[in-house]
Image (tube, rainbow, N blue to C red; front, side, top):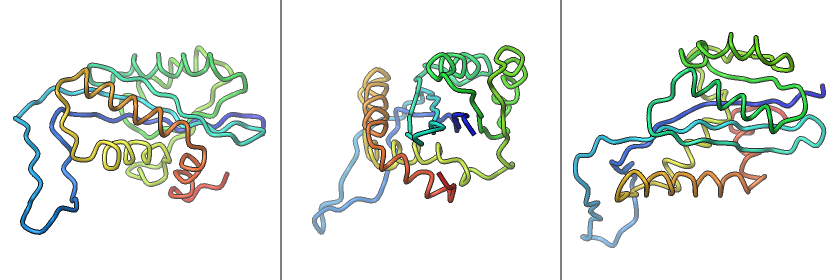
Length: 178
């Protein structure tokens, strides 16, 4: 159809580790040394599918505060500068997305928005980006500070971005044809 399809979502990352089950020798329970820290980062990502070659892309931004409608609008505007084709943006009904949608549609003629059904994160392949980052790459990771956390999140996302097969698997997981 000549349009780039973009699935977008956001997630939060805390200084507290995401504790996952791990292997260890019998009787040697692994211990994560951390203290109660509430600082956090937020991240926005967009998983794209090019219209002709069906090539996958992953764009992201990391913020030092909770994502607001203005942040999401800015992220999509920057993304549109990098994509030449008309864009179909597929997003959930999160208030931040709803708040940015009207402004985005008014400012960008080549943008159209499709809404995911309520309470259906399994339909958004971008959710798998966060799943991989949190529960695989950064599982049991105890960052020293927010800078260390931000660098680690960015490293994980860059690694994910470079793997076309992995990005395609996110669509397969969501049972979406390419």
